[in-house]
Length: 69
View 1 (tube, rainbow, N blue to C red):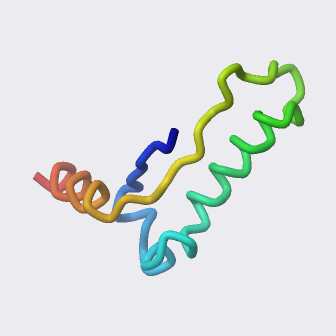
View 2: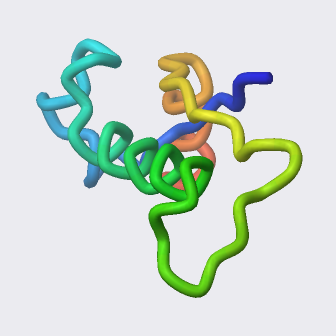
């Protein structure tokens, strides 16, 4: 299962022009990978595993337009 994710425009900047370039998304997914692997202290391994987030340009645009209204 994949989840779509949109960052506010102020976080996006030009670094998220390509989904693979989005540092905030990559860092967030790294925490999810660590959680799924049991590498976070005092956090049980989730069952089912926590899904990775996927950048969605259309969702980001919608979120930006909504927040600007």
